[in-house]
Picture 1 (cartoon, rainbow, N blue to C red):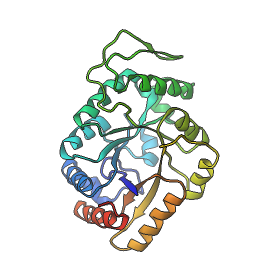
Picture 2: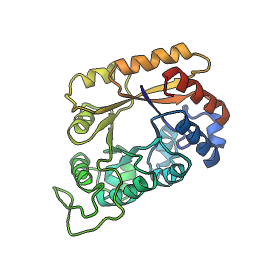
Picture 3: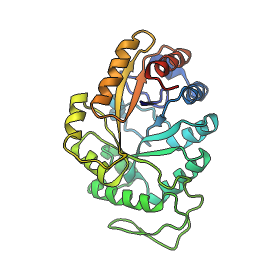
Picture 4: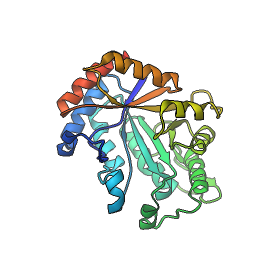
Length: 283
């Protein structure tokens, strides 16, 4: 079983964030990352929002650490655990910008990057960044093709419907020959996009039956990753319940389970990681 972590501290969604996280910073996050690395977890996550409108922040939260800066630091504190953006919004960036910045991160981390990518839904943020909101799905599809032609390639060339480039050098390029691309979203379209253009699907917002129903409708290539969530686990207090939850998530179609943990402090969080690693048989 592969188990990743929805990183604490780096986001603060109202009603979800634990009180200790709001007082924690990079020291606590770095210690947690080191423990997760040592204990055999698959990945850490970091999401992206550039500037959340004040009214939207009441629902989505206002705290979103920048993934590139965060993972650049955590790459130096860890050795094996993968670093997964969950997610970058494709419409906020030119594909070559992602290839250069995150290709450098892949080099810095010795080939541990996973690019989680999404179409985006927050129109006010698109407007703020002067990024087109209408037609973003088609633009995202073209960006995915452009990224596949660029990641790990020092002299990329691409001619698509929205992006065209040639006779350029992007160095350093990603270390991995094929950086894993995971597509976020909870719609059938997001899964179809992932199966056609990427290497995995990292959905949200549905129960296990909902995830299973969508997965049954779409053929997926061999090796395709399905990254399903398991929220609010308490492996110290209820290891049997946690084991059952992990098994149910795999039965629903997960190839990787991405978890959140109940904790009262950073040290308690690490104790929960230790218990979860034992329950899931990660080491």
